[in-house]
Length: 299
Image (cartoon, rainbow, N blue to C red; front, top):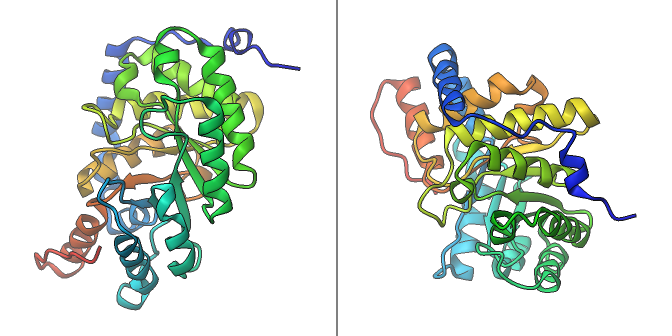
């Protein structure tokens, strides 16, 4: 029987005040940021990274280089590896052939990323093919235009279809929060995605003017906790887009730490989509541990 997302949404309070959300974020950071800024948490945040390259100029050689660096990482650093490497579907076979690092996943954007402006059959097929070629995880974008028109049923059903197409693969659903703009819209999209079967909800593609914000992270992690309280199903959270410094990482970690329980604070349920963040975290960890300023460019 087809689910009616409008009926499901009636069981949630979707109305949020944007200024109150902003004030809550400031209070969390004022209370928690300094105590969380430790080498241990910087290393933990490194282990949450989906090391990402999503450029039209990406080549098989670049994907192979990413894989080799990740393969060799623990020969050079005594700390946890990244969680995953995230690429376009075309590069998935290259990662599948070359990535050997234990526990590191292959993630692929799909579903006509980043616009999601195509037929659902095309989007679902791309998800299915990426998994068949070796992806463990699929990152898709909601139909933002349909959402902004109030067609929540289409948004819901397209996520359901892409989740089914992923088979055994985990599905991360990107809300593109910078385009949703309001706290109420972000909360509504979060609930729709989770009710449709998302394994993770993710802020952004990194391809629009406004990407991950702390306010969006606060709204989404609160929604994750409420959904868990209602259903008993844990859904992960992934901020992405513009997170590049150690300060950025710990600020987002502080929001998740405040709103979610400890069993979310690992890379099974918490990720960061990033590229330059990995090197910046390594540089900051080295500085704290040795007292020496050294720019590390491993990746």
